[in-house]
Structure formats: C-alpha cells, structure tokens
Length: 266
Image (cartoon, rainbow, N blue to C red; front, side, top):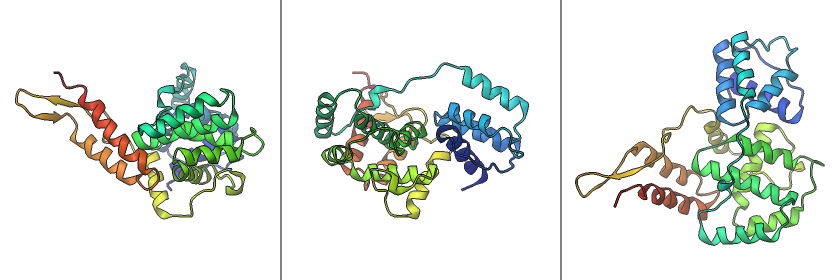
C-alpha cells in the first residue's frame, strides 16, 4: 500500500470514525491524488473532515490552492444515494429481496445494514469498489452504534445467497477501517492475498469501462460494440467475483448486455 493510499485511509478514518491518525509527509502531487480518490469514491466530505481534525499535524502540509479546491468541493450540494441500486438482477433473489423490504419496517436498523450491503455489492459488480456505501455499512456495524438483529440479518443473507459477498465486505471493512473482526456481526473471510489485490481497484484510475458499454447496428446486418474494452472488462469482473456471489455475477453480466442491446434501433 503506497503512502498516498495510507494517508487517504487515515484521513477517512479520522473523518468518519474520529480516530487519531498520524499523517506521513507527501508531495503536492500525491495530495492532489488523495483529493481525486476522495471525490471518485464519494467520501470527499469525510476526508475533508479528517483534514480539519488532523490539521495541527506537522506533516499535513497541503498547498493553499488545493485547500481552496477542497472548500469549493465541500460547498457543493450533496448528491443522494441512488435508490435504484437497491436491486438484484437474479429474478428469484430480487423477489425475495422485495418481500424482505415489504415486510420489514422502513426504519429497521437491520434493514439499513442489508441495504448498505446491497449498495456495496451493486458497485462491486458494476463499477468496482465504491467506498461511500462501505463507510456507511461500517458506521452501521460499529459496536453500540445501532441495534442490529444479527440472527435476522444472517437469515436474510442466506435467503439472498449473499453470505460470501457479505463476508468479503466485512473483510474490506477490517482492512480499510481497522475494525476488530470480533466486533462485526458478519465474520470476515480468512486472510488472502487475492483479496488485497481486489482492493487495489479502489485506487486505480478510471476503469477502462468508463463510458458505458453500448451496442449499435451499422449499415450492415451486424451488431457492433462502441467499447470493446468495456465488454472485456465487465466479463473479467464477473468472473473475478463469481466465487463471492455466483448467482448474481452471471445474471448481472447478462443484464448489462441486455441493457446495452436495447439501444439498437429497430
């Protein structure tokens, strides 16, 4: 883990969880990268709060022009979470999910945890890691933060076949936010170097699928894709996460192609 990544996570932990962190010295370019990742991951406000909390530290030396950019970003309106992401592409699992949501009270803290897991799962399968819902999930799972029915939550995860993807998310929470595994209602996966490599997605620059996959029909009879790299990227991603959520990985890939094909003019 490079120094920019380490400082980014320290600022995020300080801003989200009020943890006392020690910042390492960095160049202006690396501080700019921290800003970019914070914006890409939807956690700019939390990282900025961390900057304020740790402002007295000697090595937190950010150029004035960059701090002005931070302030302008924080002043912008908050974009709410997309509720349409609370879905599953597997039809059988989606029906079970809708039944759970309909039956459970809207203000249920246990349902809030499930929704946060779903948002995180949706981003993992569609776009790669997205920290915003993962941070929200970590906040919900903190000891004594909210009353969670662990038995009910585990029952839901079994019903939706989400046990292993939930364990992956718990592993990422332990890895990124340094929470004790024993404090979580979901057991993390055993230590595995492959999981650490998956976490590298978090800090990679824009994925090659940027610009959604679209199919078009030319003057000939053949269907063409406007972004072959996107098609390959999505296929590799589905294969990469198949072991964590088999039923959803397959249908999610098929659904992405189906949505793209709808753009073809009759």
